[in-house]
Amino acid sequence: MVPAAIHEGSLTETHHTVADQPKHKSPYTADRGIPGAFEGETVTRRRFMTGSAHGLGAVAVGAIALPALGFSLGPVFERQKFQWQNVGALSDFNDETYVPRTITIVNGIGEAGKSLAYVRLRNPEIDTEPEDEYNRVIAISTRCNHLGCPVRFTEAAGKFICPCHGGVYDFRGLREGGPPVRPLDRFYTRVENGQVLIGPRYSVNSELRRFSPRDPGQPVDGIGQYLYPARFSTPEK
Amino acid sequence: MPKFKLPAPPLPAALQPRPKRPGASDGAGAQAAEAGVSVVDWIDERTSLSGGLRWLMFRKVPKGTNWFYTLGSATLFAFLSQAVTGVFLAMFYDPSPTRAYESMRYITDEAFLGEFVRGMHKWGSTVMVILVFLHMARTFFFGAYKYPRELNWVTGVALLILTMVMSFTGYLLPFDQRSYWATIVGVNINGTGPLIGPYLSDFLRAGPEFGALTLSRFYAIHMMLVPGLIAALIGAHLYLVAKLGTTAPPWLRAKGEPSLREDEV
Image (spheres, chains in turn blue, red):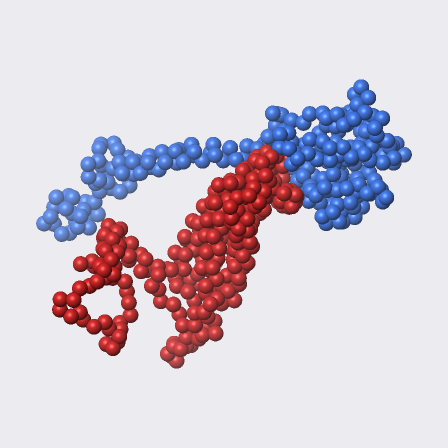
């Protein structure tokens, strides 16, 4: 009360009515009795400076933080190019058993970028999935679909067995026992001039329907294909 | 004459040093001590650090404080040991998929005391995880997580998670068969989380496959990102410990006024 009275210049007057006080409902700073306010000013300069300093600070932080975030998240949206790799002549393979072939998954990182594929010819008696130009030769990925350990084809049993947690797959790569959530992944194959070429990996569900490649541990049957979405199809690098 | 004095308990008259005889010299030792005190005093006059240090170090502790209360400090020293040995390992280590194993082999087999420093770092990580859990168990069983120390528990759990991140990212760095396959499995476990799992594992691997960037990414997380976070959170954790004090062990009951006892729940 007292400061208001001083501002009005009526030091002697101790009682004053509500009408003496400045109108606080006015948006103009001059009307609110703010010292040094200009006519028509709605925001105090202190508030304006605080707001603009915070705003500029936010822009400066964003200018550094957003590119850094994009830099670290960028690889999530990148798709690697996969070349077709020659793994030998068609006559090297048969439809009775698998022949292991080393393929390169990632270039330029030595042994860590290599993987193994088990290759055989399509056998119409056991391979009931529809035939097309990409599965005349069947190439099975050794990545176990429990958590990604390398499976081994055991000739005597005719099964793929994972050393880590006991996953077992039958001759076609379908899950037979243990913790894996889907059959072994496969590679697209092509036959060109009598040579077998291995291409990109794809995942299959329990009916051997093709899905875009998923990571191990991610089922593609039923609701699984929606819970574990495929990568965004960005252009290849 | 320096003003700085360390706090000391009052001595009984029999133990107090005798006053000097007139004309006796202080001796070189006393003069050296005086010089040291002057330096500390010079710094303290400009920084006022002594008040904060006194606040941090000369705290009242409850009756019944015992060896279980040292587990937090033990964890801190395990972390400091990891930090120091880690810095020296980083001088030799090469986070490239084709050279990482070779650089680890060089540290272990050829660098002077390399096997020792690497062993300290390797076994120290296990010790740190064990100490973290013992410290957590002490806090739990002594009820030291209760009001007003909930934030200490929360920062402690964050530190536990960060310690696990350190263990996971550090496991890949030797880049032998065990590291490689353990990381494949670990990343794929992350990938089994519904909806965000696939993106999380792509983020960890820096791409759809374990590639050239995975190792350097793990290395950067292991030696820069997480240690910084851990150090900052340890600061907050310690500040709260100093601010709130430690709890008395649960087997000690306060002997209050009988009239106040009915307020106890």
